[in-house]
Image 1 (cartoon, protein in one colour):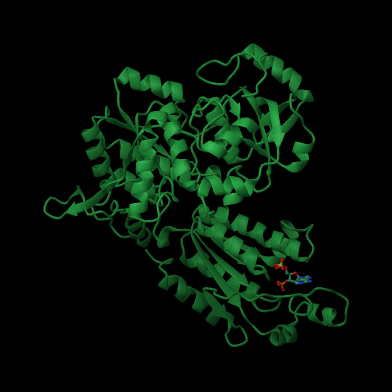
Image 2 (image 1 turned 90 degrees about the vertical axis):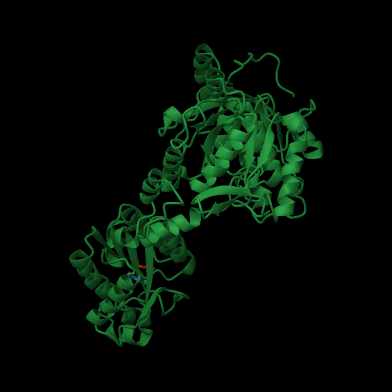
Length: 565
Ligand code: PPS
């Protein structure tokens, strides 16, 4: 590595420097240029600083990078499967040079580390992607490595940590590699299996893990996969709570939970090899290798291929110090009602999707599938529809009848649903939330996604959001659907009243003004309206009274079980 010898040696357990040096670096930092890390990059920095990426003591410089791509090893011969470099944008790369120190900050601007630049270069990302994935580069592959399409330049160099990235959740579950290793020694855990889980685990998983642990005479350390947007998503909290409950079903000396900042890299066998190194650095001796859809989704294509990857990981055992253990096929033994392993060749029963379906339908989950504590944790996210929030999203031309329908439904929801109800009508939003916006495509999309954001917060908290913007463009409507469906139901209602009828009504005189050329860019006249292809409902108010239109929506909600007990 090409780091300056004059820099102070790091404490072996982390790259955090002495507080005296922290003070010095902070006082110098006013002159440093700053990089603000995205959530993925923050995970990588934390794993550098806490030494989960041992022996790396900074971002890879070019020599190590080339050596990793050419031969899967660092320049000094240490096996290492993937580049760990700091991705930056071109403008930033153009303004810095080797030898310079830069400040590494979180999104809020808090300084976490100082990087003394060894190299700045523009990598051949297509080559990098081919080295990682072979010929089968996924669509998002080229830019996946540096965690963002906007960061096509790399910086390498030694890192001095000032602080770990700040976490406000589950702090008692965040042991560093050195702390976890010490914990294992104190407990007398000589063999430990690292299990990274991207979903809640249930009884079949427990039977498998117990069987493996007993066979290997080993304990288990579980950790959830981190999601990039974890703090805006309930998924992270749900997953950790589920795993807490799951771990509590084991005897204390057999399993524990620890959060490591490991995110799903989707980098196939090489990603799994990096995970093996990280597990080793956390003190594990073994690692569970899941089939697809779990810890390394691109690890297998079919079961034969999967076995080849597991064998390949086993061949690296001398280098990584980790024994890979393949996920087992578990089947239900009808006589005992318990899960047992089988050599049927297929993969482990995954009850998770079935469990979620039961919960969403509001039905009892069969006892054989999961644990009461895990189910309680899951119920906080996967409520039956009658308890979920939802959004009624009316879209259509001006004068189509959106606002009238929305008002009727608003009142009906207050009367019937038992949930808090909010009306976000186009005009009202324009006055209060989007008063500075015009009717350009860009501003309309912004207006619509703002409405979507507010509605998603309402739905997240179990309320009903009734929205009625024109929302003329499909992408913005899709984005709103995506935001809301994370938390509850999204009912898109195309108010498809023909333009001739809207124009005839012309309550605001807006069509007359458009025809007279007084206003430009009126939707349906000289601005597009892209009708939804698959809305949940289509209502033409030239054929129905407001009450009849509302009744169509109410019947749909009842049929979909959003109303009632
Ligand atoms: S959008 O496209 O979803 O952002 O529009 P929205 O926020 O719903 O605002 C629509 C209301 O603004 C008035 N208005 C116009 N509509 C469309 N095009 C142009 N150029 C325009 N200028 C003003 C119009 O009265 C809409 O009200 P509604 O309630 O739809 O009749």
